[in-house]
Image 1 (spheres, rainbow, N blue to C red):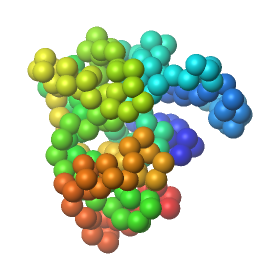
Image 2: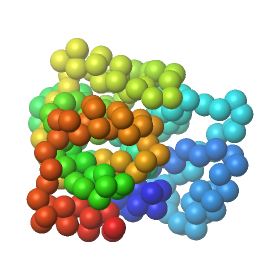
Image 3: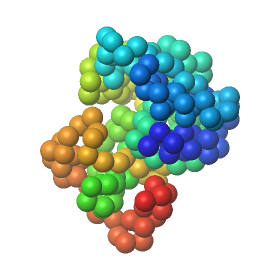
Length: 207
């Protein structure tokens, strides 16, 4: 999944950019893989194994050590289209807002081998925002990003973009949220994709 996430980043049309990869000190596989890249735009950020940092704390650390004017959430188990950064930053600039999220994205159930078009909502994982618009993520293992989106939305500085082809959210069985959440809160509002679109999803995911 990490290789795919980094590949998606390297294929982005937007320049300049940097990708921060946070990993725990005992994750030797990630450290060794990053060392083989020889890619100056990808930075490894090692964090201690103990005390274990929550997902929210890790996101806050990534914001703190990043250098860009725009920040993008880049979850490593999902697929990101090559124009995701360019299109979302373009939407921010065109709308004269400070942040952008996708209102729909593609869903892929890797367990059941099925693809869907999501329902409409503010998909937290697709956040791209100016640094000045960011607030602290909740120090939590899940649901840590909802408060950030809620605040940006309440301030009227959020623009939504309906381009679901920019993002494929993948349920693989070991996600932050479990199967019941996937079925009750996500799939319930989604529409199954046809054969051609499903084959496109499988192709871009290299499945």
